[in-house]
Image (cartoon, rainbow, N blue to C red; front, side, top):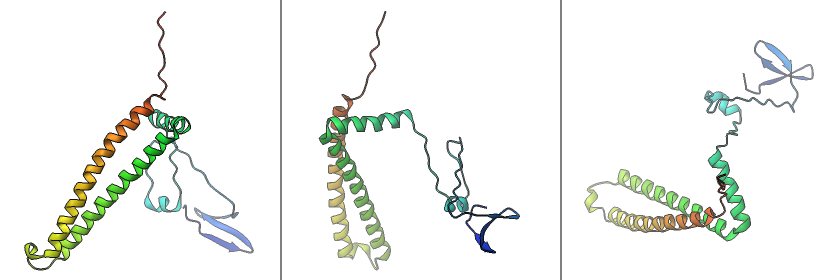
Amino acid sequence: MIARQTKKTLGVMQVQLGDRLVEYHKNFKLFLHTKLSNPHYPPEIQAETTLINFTVTEEGLEDQLLAVVVATERPDLEEMKAGLISEQNQFKVKLKALEDGLLKQLTTAEGDLTENLALIESLEESKRISDDIKVKMQTAAVTEVNINKAREIYRYEPIVLFC
């Protein structure tokens, strides 16, 4: 049992472990470790615990180190990349909000949809905003490629010598 169900008996804090009551200290912490790459735990255990994944891939570590080097050597470049990622995430959120708004309007619309002027105007406005966001996302993708090319000069490439 993982739950923190404690009892106070004769001034002593106790916790139920299996069929026994064991003395419990308020500062007690339990750390469990597994070598499983993707362990599965039941929801009741996940609700009572904090899972931390310390798995690092070589590619992920390389990207993190590259970001540190670029932030030191070219902070403007790393700032642009961070801003670009943030902007792209905002675009995705905006598109999702537009989709949700349209679905809500469509489900709550009454009567003939082709005669609902508010819905038609909303569809046109959503289409305009969506097209604008798509153009900005395409521009951002090109900018991201250029930023990544500029960052690549800081990537270490081993020199192979032939003897």
